Image (cartoon, rainbow, N blue to C red; front, side):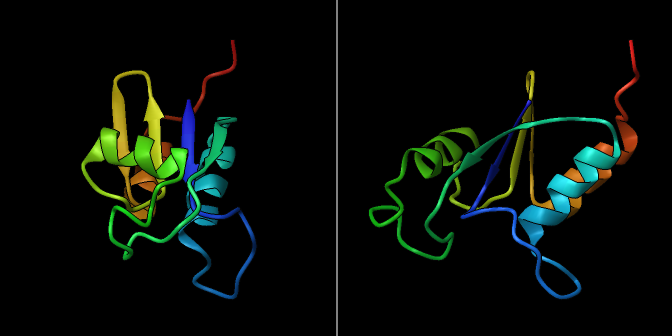
Length: 94
């Protein structure tokens, strides 16, 4: 499982940073995703978002926006969608 985020998972005042919110939801559901920092900013033109992480996000989704969750064949884009996915797919201890 991989979670693509912007610069990091820093805390911000409510409602919180979208990348951090998605990460916290995955942790609360028992997942421990690998983190890829995509850096850059989704509003920038693609030629300015040239980091490896942003190129991977664009290949996966056709867009430059993060957060993006990749779990097996499942790709979920956006913090609200990732939070919903995490709530619906809690990790069951083996």
